[in-house]
Length: 350
Image (cartoon, rainbow, N blue to C red; front, side, top):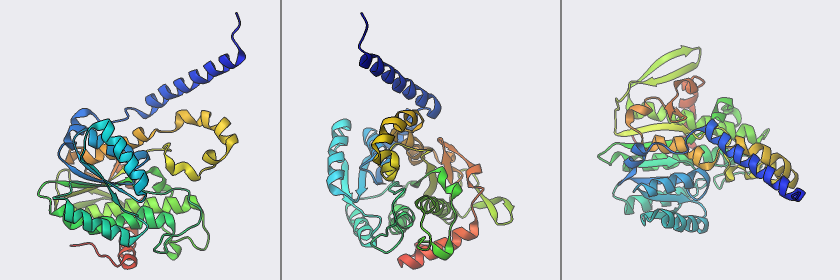
């Protein structure tokens, strides 16, 4: 008896997707840090921005599963509440809360920080995960280009306003800035940071991610007071810090989500908005897209791992990666920091 053609096609397609999933697991590795690291979440109070979808949701759910109190900092409260209930149902951890925080609005960030300082006895980890990608030309409520305003300036302001709360924690605390390898292709266009003259969404995104990594490296330097210049080629400087030595109790690291991750960040890409692309391109691209769980693995590891594992400002594939920061320009980092303080009117506490 011959099977109908649609059954054969369906079987072949299912086999292809199954093989793709196995290939993805082989290429991208384990989707979570080892259990010994995850157990360190117990009893911690963690803020995760952009926690209602994608990588942020995966980080939040894993932290809740392992006993952390999770503060989901999100712009859309309706979506946040829905996801919060789902996470509580999955983890049976009632200590998961939603708090409004729009990183494109300084007033929203200030209101969020004021509430956190009033309600929470301490903060152990801040995960700056929220971000946008591939947006059409637009500005935040502060008048900044959306990628630059949300991905960099929003995280900069939030971190500055929370720093005294973080320092007030008697234990070691951590700031994790979620990044990706696009920062290596970025250029800080100081003459037009908002890209108003010639807008390209990819270049705007790359610039914002480079800004985040520059901010991370300089913040780590200023909080530790113990950086060495490992090598210098003209203006190219590699940052390095002695393992395990910190000037304050605040540890800082950028963690690479790694490659193209299948999250709502891709919603502005053609593959999401074209029926033709969805039908023909998506099945071929699927095995090579990281899942949100894979994308969350390194940021989650960065939030919980021992201090010795974040001795340099950049983490890739759950390992310190000094080579990734060879493109950093320390003068650009200082100049960008000064501009961010001037534009926001907020200075980092000393």
